[in-house]
Image (cartoon, rainbow, N blue to C red; front, side):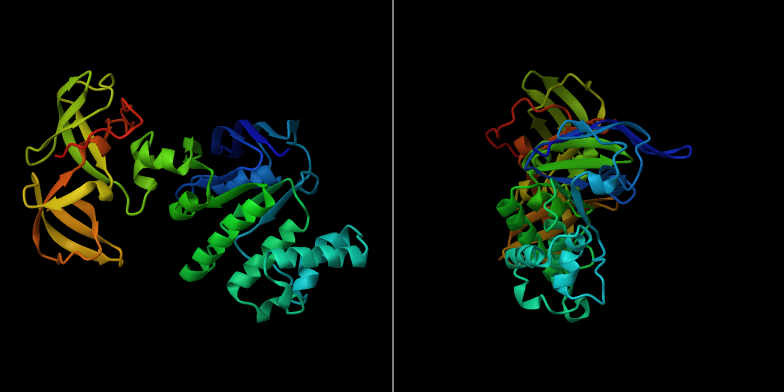
Length: 370
């Protein structure tokens, strides 16, 4: 078993507190991704798990055992860094088998294990090459192979795809997902890229300024963000935010009036707001529609054509732009004047404190439009 638990873990450098009381459970076989903007503490938290940074207070447990004071090499973990960190004078075979050599494993047994891992990562034909003769993606696979060969209880990945170009990132991301399926190991992965988080994770941990904002599956975070920060961070393009005012409320939800006079009824709890309160309405681009009778109007300023879909950026006012996702075959152009509507039951309401009002149902309702 490779369950990992963090209990009120903090990290300070002098008077500066970086990690501010993190409580988290990562279960055996889970692929858990730490995500957040630069400086949120995600890499520091990973290094504390690895034993490369001391824990200021709190407890770290692996398989139920407190490991705060156990050295990194005795924790049963393996870490893959952003840089490949390969020995340039060694072949792929020697790089991958180096940890086993230090452990004094016999050469024959070492070779068998290296070749087994090489087959898993499709590296056998490169075993006798040195790193300079490999592509970036191949080097990263060697670094991953060097971790796998140690047969750790938990894998740690610190932004391992950041040095790859866009095409290689996509390919290596797919390979990592398949690797997790084959190995069935616990994996903890750090990235600032929410697309990587959404596509790889069983569980996402969203961090901000050393605190956990929300933990959940990718779809839970996407459809039910706890606050404005999570709603805006998860999703690409990001969620649209429209300033509005609460005009009425009932057991059925909250009515918000937005600029231009459009009114939307959102099925959320009314406990946290009062009539007249300023709020923000959040709606994702796929729930914004263009039409001839929409109550919100604006001018197209950018059209992003991606083939199967098109993202249309519509300026409503000098300080407000909405993004709508439309069909890839759309003929819309920059400078077109358009009208917008949105699926009301797919909207979110965020209070002045940034917290989301709780949805009355976790399931889609009959679509209304604003």
